[in-house]
Every structure is written in structure tokens, then in C-alpha cells.
Amino acid sequence: MGDVLAGFHAVWEFESDSVLIRYERGIRTPKLFQALGERRVPLSALEGVTLAPGKRGTVVLRLQPRAGADPLMEAAAGQLREGSDPYRLVLPAERETLAEYYADELKGLLTESGSGPADRFLVEVPEGPLQFKAYDGKAFFDGTTVQFRWSWTGASSAKWKAGDQSFTVADLSGVEWRSPEVFEGHLRLLERSAEAAGPVGSVQPDQDPAAVVFGLGYGPVHESLPFAAAVLAAVRTRGPVPVAPAPARRDPADIAERIRHLGELHQAGLVTDEEFSSKKAELLAEL
Image (cartoon, rainbow, N blue to C red):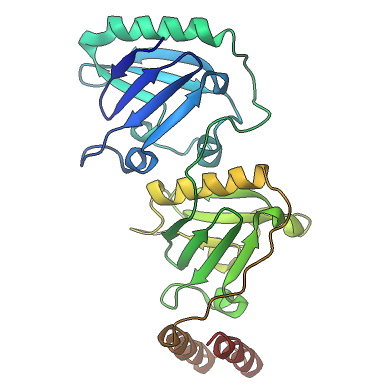
């Protein structure tokens, strides 16, 4: 088609085999859109398009992705608010006729691209390295390995006992993302080795070393959802197990602070003498 349609917060460029969505930047643009920047959505990743009245004199043109085609939407699992849906283009009502024209054109092209669940991801996700700050730690992903580094101010004693965590994508079967905009928001990594141990959710996220928990200002959607989508995409397309790099030496001040907090847990009776000595030795070995 080769045409461009501009709406609020985004511009859609129609190509012969895809729709290129460029999201605007600005204080009124949803932060998720700003984080995504732009996305190329192949027509093969879509199964439909709708046009409906919007709020306050607008119309909404929306692409309907196929199930399993977009890791971002798979990770979101229906939890995104309407205003943060990256497949919606909001236009002034006076442009309804133009929007209807593009909707009809797309429908004609989509009949040739197939429908039903996709057997693989067709929409690209943000490239690593990615990271965000959760309430009880920091999460890092370099494309092959996810790391959780616990915060002494927020992490539970169970997580402190377990220590900082590292997971290769080959050891994971999926990702569970619960929006920070709802109660008990978190990001949990689903381990293959834990599948037989019990159903997901049998351990609370704040006690699970394979999860980080969100909170007010921690793990916002525009940071944690692209992170979850990138991990999910890597899990679905994983290759050979990568060789873990040698751990970098830690900041002595950070180690000292962790030992101090460990001592507080020990004095409070939350950590045994043996656990205190063992964990202290691990921390000193990182210097």
C-alpha cells in the first residue's frame, strides 16, 4: 500500500507485507509506546482489523494479532490497559472515512496471510541488554541469561538465604508476568526443573528466588513487560546452553552492606549460625 496514517501517539506506515508502527514521544504518550519506539508487524502476524467509535470524538483502528505471534502480547496475557494497547490507533472522528478505507484494504490483504494461532513468534521484541528495578531487587537480561540481584531493603530472608540468582534461557519453560498495576504484581521465571514440584503459585513471589516483586514505582509496565517478552522470546527460540561468564568482582561497599544486613537477619533469628557463616563466606569470596 505504501501509505501513512497518523493518529494520536502513533503513525502507521502500510507496506506490502507489514505495518510499520512508529510511536511518538512526549509527556502524553503512554510510556510503553515510548519504550517500544517502533515495531514492524508482519501481515502474517495478524488475523483481523477493526474500526470502532472511540471516546470524545475519536475512532479507533485496531489490528488483531494472531495468538502466539507477538511475545509482548503473550507475556501481557490480556493485562494491558486499553490506552496502552500497542495495536490501537486513535484518530479524530472526521478521519473515519479514511480509516475505514485502510481497514478494508488491510482486510483484503489479511485473507492471503492465514489465520489461527501462529507456530512461532513473528513480531520482534526489544534487543538486550535489558534491566529494571523491582521492589526486592534488580533484574538483568543479556539475551541468554537472566540475573536477579537482591536489594537489602526489600528482599525477603528467603531470598537472602538463596543468594543472587542466575538462569539461562535453556533452563526456563516460560515467564509469568503480573502487571504492577494490579495487586501482587511480579515477574516469575518458570523453571523446567521445578515443573514437577507443584503448580505455579504454590510459593509466594516474595519468597520465590525465581521471582521479583513489583510495587509503587517498581517494575513499571514500560520496563518489566518488554523485559518479560524478550525473555519469553529467547526461551521459545533457545539454542545451546551458553557458557556462563566468570562473575565480575563486586563493589566492596556493596558486599559490606550485604554482610551488615545479613547480620541483622542473624540477630533477629531469621538466619541460623550456619546459614550466616556460609552466606558471609560466599559474599567475601566475591571480593
